[in-house]
Image (cartoon, rainbow, N blue to C red; front, side, top):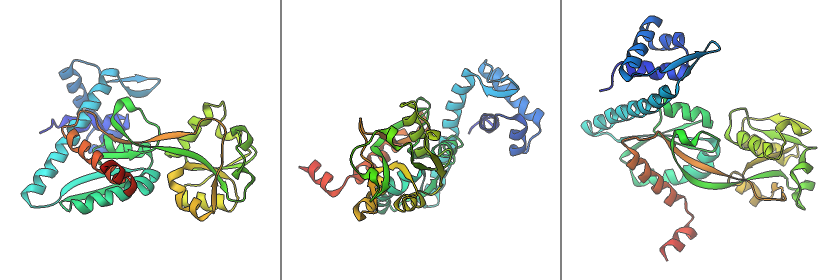
Length: 306
């Protein structure tokens, strides 16, 4: 059983605001302050500090946050598992997926896995990388497959797959051939996902490595839906950068073309993320291995068997 002050500490960590934390917990602000003060005395360390009128975690506070978030998640999951066994219910699995990771890479192997394990009750949450990591820290999901940038040192994580990140244009666009430099594309309208999306962050990072940014393009159009982006590009309203796995059908149909670029190919990892030092780490590793095995094509599986 976790100390009743732990949810208070975790809420303050998430909101970085004593007043907002008190409102969420239906407590008074002095009660929140008192509980945090108790934890600071118990652990012998200052957990929060004010800098420029903003609340932030101290290094000791970050260590405690990471540890208590994992313990709180494991405690909640243990309750769910006990209830499932006691009532003959399915075992819970709460998993998060970003757009590309979910729809184009993980959904099919997860479906195969669940078909083989009818005793598992899976809940799937979707969202951007930052949102899913927030859900993970809050204990609302157990693990996540994400495509965006994040602090890898703060989580337990493994690479599910390394995907090519490619520029795309309409099939009859001049950029379909021959190879181009990144700089040759700047006169085009760039169609990108919304702020906070993994693919936008990956593109911004790749551009920064070339001393470029999104605003270096002639125009930038923001579209939240990947499916709409693909339609817009096919209709020659601009170019975009996406994971190649997300456009396999369109490439086969001939409605889109990959822009051949000079230099090394852009690649980025799809990561399987969970909280560090969880008591259920072995379960997560087994799930990861099972999904990775089921993500292989029949040809890949056949070659492994021989």
